[in-house]
Structure formats: structure tokens, C-alpha cells
Amino acid sequence: MTDVAADPVHAFIAKTVEENPVVLFMKGTPDAPRCGFSSVVVQILDHVEAPFVGVDVLQDEELRNGIKTYSDWPTIPQLYVKGEFVGGCDIVREMFQSGELKPLLVEKGVVSA
Image 1 (tube, rainbow, N blue to C red):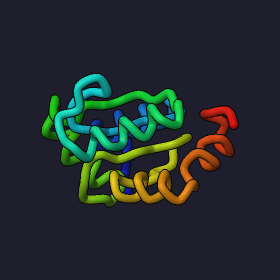
Image 2: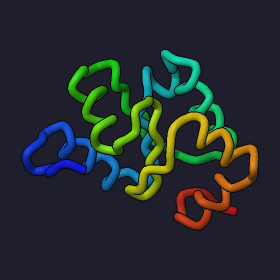
Image 3: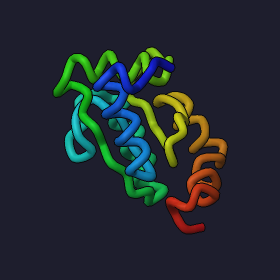
Image 4: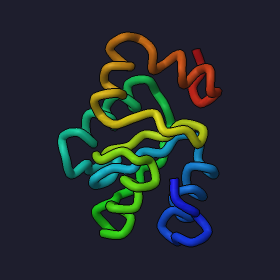
């Protein structure tokens, strides 16, 4: 992880994940995802009734590149819960299918059991 003080994009990302319990950095918005992977994660979060903030990385090239270096993860979408990087579409889908996602969200206090 780079020095957030030296990078305004990383500072924005850090502030966003700190201030919001569940954040999805995605292509498009929760109401209108602009890629299939983002759409899948939105559907999963809606299904488990997790309130989340969607951040559209397509609005800003620096943000789109910055989120990849911030998490050291090459793809979008990226899900953060209580400031921790959870993963991208495949990881979120696997956690949902295996029954691990909702207990994580319950444990973190973002959804009720």
C-alpha cells in the first residue's frame, strides 16, 4: 500500500472505506451497473440485504487506476467491508455460494442475522 498522504486518490479511497461500512468500487452505479461483474456483486449485496455505497470508477481515470494500486488487486469491482478489502466479483460470488458472505457481514455488524 502506498503512502496515502502523498496520493490524493488513495486518500479519497481510504476516507471512503473508513466512513462507510460497506463500499463497492464498481463500474457504473448500483442502480445502473455498467459491467456484468459489477452487476453480479450488486445483486448479491442486495440479496443479503447489505446496505452499501457504490463508487463509480468510470467517472475518473485516476480513481480507476488508483483503486487497483490501493488494494493491490487488478480488477474491478472491489468490495470493502468495515475498511477491509474482501475481494472482487469471483471471491464475493464464491463467498455467497458457500454461505460465508452473510456471516461475515453479520459478524462485522453491517447486516442482521
